[in-house]
Image 1 (tube, chains in turn orange, purple):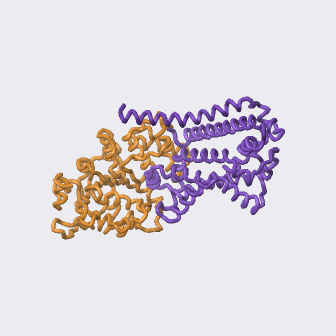
Image 2: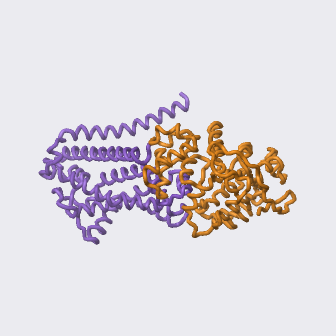
Image 3: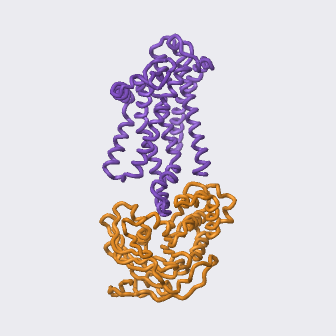
Length: 291
Length: 278
């Protein structure tokens, strides 16, 4: 169930229609998501930092194997929304979350939930690439070792596989022992994606993964995200509307209300959001006349 | 001359003045100290209150005192720094209180530490005038500097590392030991070096705790004379001891230089090998 406000402010229930089947990229994995099956269900999510509201009554479904883009102006709570999904909100003092978030029939907000296991399944990529200050190999192996993989043969296999997946293998195979910090921004970001993929997650949360990169690196990372479709469920926050339009199956439009709290204005198929938005704010935003 | 040029000249003059004073000091010690410096001087016992003979036992005592101090201070200091930086919130009363106390402690004159060490380690704990008392007193002195330096090093590591580690499902402990502490290695080394420097140069605190005895120490419970105490004694109390004092000072400086470069290269090697390949 999805609740949205229409242009007159009335809540409307609008579960998106199935989307057309699409062809997969070279990664060639996973079933096409032409029948939307919710993997994460967010219902009436509200988030406060201290007493300041950051998100108000957000309800949406994240569909399995699809790319969901979250668009909207800065400060409207898109990043906060992402951090709820892998419980990074736990690390922010004074952050209060209410509402219902169901992932894989588990309550994501359950205090007894195995958060480390959850974060292994729901990985996150940040705006600024964050390779650890260590060798390329150790960057990938460290989280794997943390989760109990220790045989060098296994580690090597995963290392090569994920680096191949992100198209970095040919570029770095001869310098796996050198520092990850010496890589270019785009390579660093792909390394971070590889590091997240190494844990074989189900969901990848991406917080403006291309915005700190030059256009060419950005294009390479975008291609990579395209190829993740089907095998992984991707939620991506982006300020690049063209990018959202190119890669996303579904899109959610966030806006800031008068009380400084972000809220979801409209959610639906990417095509519909960009070509036939229901809400006038969405129309103004995607046409560039506002925001 | 424009204002800019004037400022440049002024800044250069000050820099020259500061480094000039340092080189004057250093060359003075080298010129006067080299005269008596020899292998026998380094290994023999002092004779005639240090006027002749060597400084063998004194070097051993100094090394033992420094060792006790750093072995005690390093784990305590690292643990406290980690507690302050990672496990207390910046604006909470507890952290604020501890930090403020440490800053005050760092500025307390060493003679006060000496008196405290004498009262607590020598008398209350019954350790007497011993290398152990001296080393522990120095550990108390070094702790505030060590803690604050390491804490600042940890604080300076990007918060993104913590978030990224958490997002990869790593525990806080793993993030700390695998990512944050290695990234803060330069700060840890700097803190240790500052601590060793302060401990090695300390005189006042040691006179009351590790004592004066210039014989070769048999154990940590024996009194032992540190190099700095020896220099102080030779230059203040022993007529005709200046030559030995200069040589001892040269040895002390060389010792600190050796420790510094050793620590630097060890840290570099360690970082390069397993943790941070830069």
